[in-house]
Amino acid sequence: MSRNKPPLTPHLDSDAHDHMNTFLVELKHGHVSSSYHIAKRTTSLLRNMISHSRYNNAKELMELISTEGKRVTETVPSETAVGNMFKRVLRSIREEAASIQKSQEAHKNLEEDELQSTLHNLLFSAGPGHDLTAPSSQLRGRIIESIGEILTELEQSGENIAAQSLEHIHSNEVIMTIGKSKTVEAFLKGQELAKSLSKDGIDTTVITDSAIFAMMSRVNKVIIGTHTVMANGGLKAINGAYCIAGAAKHHSVPVIVCTATYKFSPNYVCSYDQHSFNKIVCPHDVMKYSEGSIVSKVHLRNPVFDYVPPELVELFITNTGGIAPSYVYRLVREMYHPDDVEL
Image (cartoon, rainbow, N blue to C red; front, side):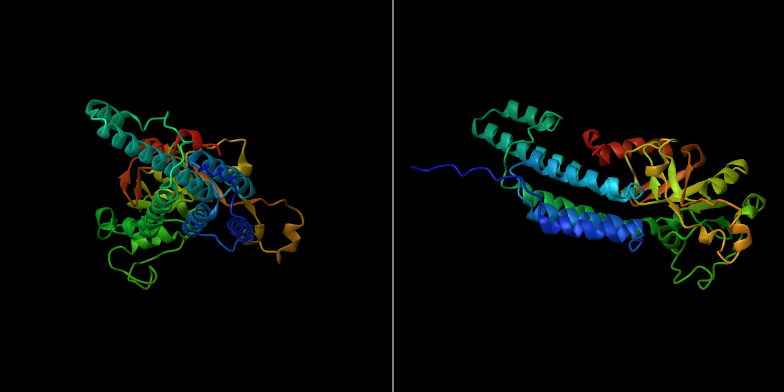
């Protein structure tokens, strides 16, 4: 007499959990600062977690991932790329579970010669009502394959953005930028230039923030990077980005933002919630400790980010092409499931 095996007790892989803790420590100490490396490392850790954890179905796996994702995002709330990748993976789990269920139902209906019902299932069974509790031996492999596709997208994102530079940068144009974005640097070097802007024959002038407005009248385009694109098309960008975007708006200079899709967040900015939106760092870069006579008489705050509203942005150049700020909400809906916006 045969007996069915008892279901596995859902369990998160302890080694993957420890690796995630190590990653969080590195983030808090600033050892991993690039959004690209943060996104890639998070996705790789999630793939490892899914490969070795125990679960019976998509619902149990999503609960494990959501619990870990909530813990991680509460630990490093300002690093939105971490939460974005958790939510992308949750969407992949939903899609793979729905795809497996559709295939099984279609196969069953074909065996019963119910062709009309099969067509109906193919069209409508991927909706929000599909069963996440159905066990499947294919689930783990399909999800790992899907995450591999996300990693490939991440690795190719910078190259895909830079390849579009010829469409947006023309000869003798004066371009203003701010900060040190690797994505913007690659974009500006997309015309077969190398190493650094000045060494590659691009005339470069460094100006102070106070000179932005005066210089803007001579500029053809503003090209900047960003840390995060919020769900409404606004930016969480380097401190000073709002100043440069505001000056560009006044002088009718288009602002172009180079950013990969992994930086698009399903969340909005709350003006009162600066803890999760911004990050305050040591003011030493603003005023040196050697200026002790002044430092002792003032209170300094050195925020890392500015919020730039969508109406100040002309165009986003992403690894999938150029999009307007008004289209961001649609791209976000394609990347994240509504139920996963809040982990």
